[in-house]
Image 1 (cartoon, rainbow, N blue to C red):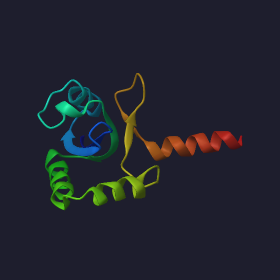
Image 2: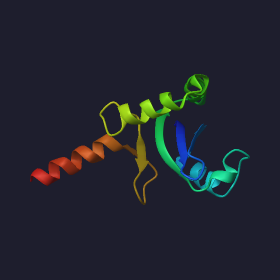
Image 3: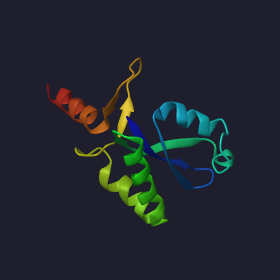
Image 4: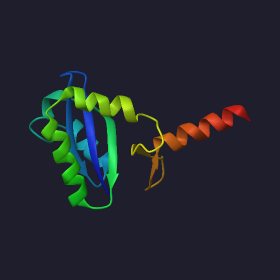
Length: 115
């Protein structure tokens, strides 16, 4: 699986987006200073991701996001998709090699709180 991701630097107050097969590894590289743009903005925080079955589809979506050249567009993605079913935001659970949609974890926690 391929991911498009958006990271944010509080230091620079800027967003950066890219694609990867491994979100955790890629975020570590950004925070180690790999890459000319992200080098000066550490620490970077993963704020958004979408999952795609092929590299081609991930590249197409990355291009779509970059073509907007808009902070407002990125922030609307963050606002409108955070923790909602249908969102493609995923996290990797500790000790696992698979990613789980954030909204499913939130729903599980809500159900547990009612038991």
